[in-house]
Length: 271
Image 1 (tube, helix red, strand yellow):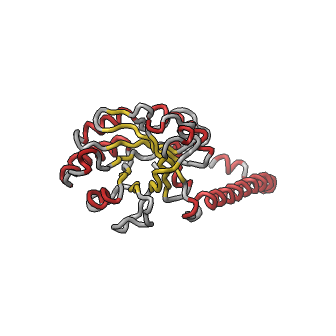
Image 2 (cartoon, rainbow, N blue to C red):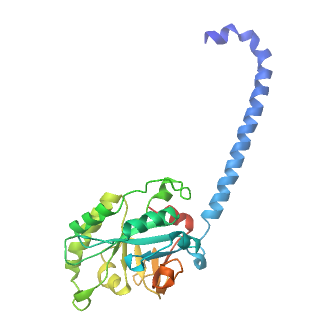
């Protein structure tokens, strides 16, 4: 207050120059705000426009079965994401996982890992196997995925399907729940996100529709409708088991191809 009283008589003379100094600064700030606003609107228009169902992002899911994969070639073909087999049961680790995980990320794909559920061991030990194998976050510099959320992997996926003797003698609902529920709980706690459930229509309707409504669904169905039989929407759909790519073992192996129900922006920021 003392400074204001001492210079009260000078304030009138100083006011005009002060205002002249403020106006250019205010104009520059206003211009910057307008530029940023237009820029943000442009980004929102491009990345958050309504989803065109004819142009949903496509991806692939692979394991060591596909052998040699040129991940830069896969990205060059327009695929946006990949699910890579990581583990099976309580002890098995896919031998190609680490190489596929590293190279797919470097190529710029949004990458996730999946676990093949076993009905022969406990869910807790299967979760330990996956957690010991799959990193929680992505490390390293990926210029094509600069934001933190875009650089995070897709949520872990659990492949629930009948195999071997269980094709003719499937587990009961109670038996499946006793393995699957603790596995999902452990994964969710460790990775901080809701796991994805992969299933074909039979497994989904028989085991998952009633008690797993809170989990995103990756449906394996070449004839999938927009909605699942219970009215839910799938998040990912494996729409063919017989695709091929010159970048995947030279096109010699069948390739599973998937689509994501959303925009590229939503896919990149899924976590």
